[in-house]
Image (cartoon, rainbow, N blue to C red; front, side):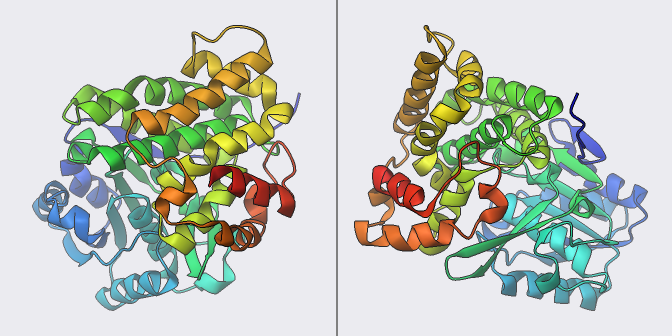
Length: 383
């Protein structure tokens, strides 16, 4: 019997409208003054109002930082930390997407003043302590509310991760009401992102474990069973709830059985060409699964029974059906399907492959070793 470690967010609140209770949670954590981290789109959509009202009702003062950018660069994190330090906050809240939650995690850690961002990239270097932290996602995709990971854009074409259990928040607040206004394209891309988390966790070479496996399977059941409906009918509260729950379960899975080559090859696409993270994953997903098929066929065939239950035959046939289903999914949801659709040309492939090979933290988890020539071939097949 192989041992394993499983870590996740201490407390989770799942309830329609529960973002209005953020003030209660923060006050129970002993906070009197918090930094609320978000982005301009979330603010303009009015999604901060319930949380702000709840904080006001509890007498918690709020300093607002809404300068988060997608794939947040270092200067955004530095600005948020300065604001938190100047305001002398004693807690951090985020209502937003994955980028906002990633920034909030790092602010909670760095505002204490004992660590510097440049020193904590990688696995296990961040030690803490951190400020109390409450995260409420506004997309059903990243699962950042239950992961010990923050991703930072450190330069042109390169992303680095800070990975440490100290980044796990005190509370994850899942309020499907916050996701009702997501446009279909964003809903589709973030939903596929969550599916990738579950698929890669289930096939992770290094830290695959039975808890992550169970969570990944349930995540795919929820995500695969609801993604078409939420893209057709974004006001379906039950479908939105199921997507948000599926995203969180996938996050819990990959927080403990890490993602691999899909993310490694997607990161340069996002960093170099400013393609949203979920769409970047979607663009390379079928080709990576095809590449991995011989090494992870038994696992892929098990997942095919969830996502393509009509598939018949042996493991190879069911894996082929899974690849076809994941190739068809973005077409059915109206997303771009080729790298050329997002402005990537054949001459860009060499640069992308060089960048992807720097993602050693991720590539080590892939069920099949990825060489530089393999990365080139996968990008070329995805053009």
